[in-house]
Length: 402
Image 1 (tube, helix red, strand yellow):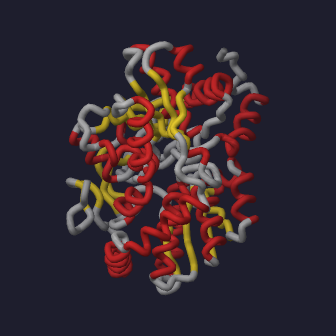
Image 2 (image 1 turned 90 degrees about the vertical axis):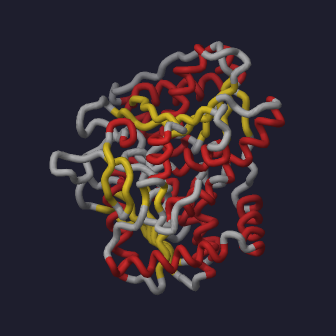
């Protein structure tokens, strides 16, 4: 799917930013258009995703889980096997290669669960760039290991103390830092959100996920998948998976948002399922609002999903009816976290566990020759300490899923 000249997917997207930011964004868009089809840029990108990140990542058939559930075959696209443990590095490599061509020396980024921050810090170290990562104070506590990983690789981590002290506030502070030094700084946005050209640019760098998946499933099953499922916070891993299949009407596309503790205000972050159109962080999309029309308080057990809006291309796909968006609760995500760990020996990220929860929900009612692919966007190492603490507090028990 392409945007119009102003960066809109239908009515969503665009640039709703202060006037001083427009020329910076327009320059970024022009530079990206210049390099995205450049053979040298593409070759360098392909070199690093192969030799630095370890692509291509495999598609894995969950034989034990499929047997237990009955019904459709469940496959995982193993983005957790990327260097650093998530899909995020696909995007950081592309954007930092662009930053270097633009003559920038400093990378600014935001992060929620920390995976984008870790990928940014690592890629900046690789490319010899200064790096500052903004992270909500709440997420700093939830993801201490990732904070230390960023610091190990030379990044400065700034704890955002305003508002809810989560991902929204990290984005706010990162944008302020970029505006204050646009000549030397490059803002490396981690999801398919923000003002044009970021949603399309992040989508393009993540589309490698869907391209690989298509070829791998065709080789393994001799047909396209019946359903592709991915978790949705901002939406980068989902749009990376979906893009390759948008033109294939036989492939159902399902994004899974966090229902958190429940569907009351402040207990979830299901922007597409329960939100309405609105503008935040420089773009128009579905968003959750408070009674004043401002970004709502949101919550998810997963630090990477607690964002009150969503990428504009997802909003457009929802309105077109091309993709379906559902939600999964904290409890369903944790149950899926343990089920995959016990049935397949794979510990999924809590973000990815939301997508897995929906696959577990629908597979038993599908034919045995049907194929589901879940984008396992990250590994759960980063979440183990959080889950262990919750188990020790009695909030969850380790179930016997076998």
